Image (tube, rainbow over all chains, first blue to last red; front, side, top):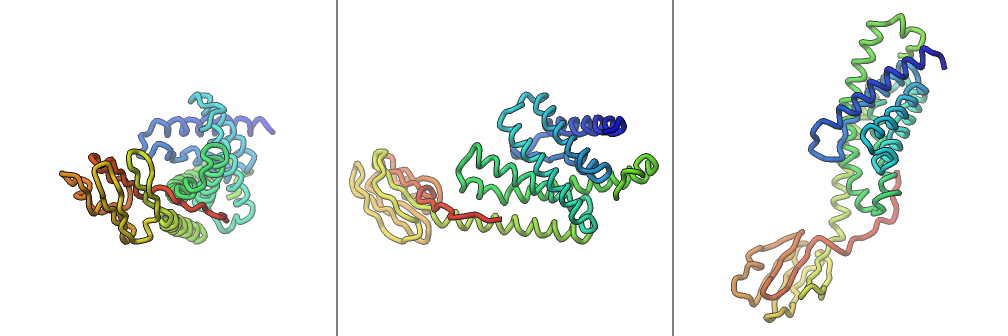
Length: 177
Length: 118
């Protein structure tokens, strides 16, 4: 890993952490609903700099974010980590498999879906262990995740296009879009 | 936004909406009714079967009617008939305080799901 990569990861992680913290301050109609704004950074990093960068940023964001919020190694940390890893891996895999089909919005939807699947699975496996409760809530979470995923995808799409337009030189050697 | 993005978005929206209807349907199938007298369950049945249930309360005989997936207190020997005025319910409770009869609808008798795929 080169110095350039490390700097990039540090800056992007800081952005992701800031969004992660900011969204916790927003009032939410449903307590467990999160917008997943940090996924904008993960997705942008994935498209522009590749899977390793995006995965590292996710790990840093989840661990540092939970340390700041005081939930490190708690239930919400486990859910956050599982969802983050699964969502990022799904987006990375989808980018490799079907780069021509899906744009950032499609990737964001995939990421949101797998993030939620991982969280539901973990919630059932570790905490709830009542299958009817999980089945009942799953479609609701899927619908909300699709809507927030769409919004995040649109924002990422705009961000990626603008970054490529404004700084084509510095991104030229890594850009895949 | 590519065509695949749109297709994926539509697919997810349709799938989750369909899932919501499906789970509501599947879970409401198994709902039943429990009747308690003095805190002890004396009668348990599914809401799917229509019938009149005579219940011996503290002050006499009351009749609980189950019809079309709903339940009501048909007759009660008490004075104010608050329980009867409550009418039909599918979920929640009817309490006949003088008679110490409680009708709980929408709970119990839940069927376990055999398997989930996908």
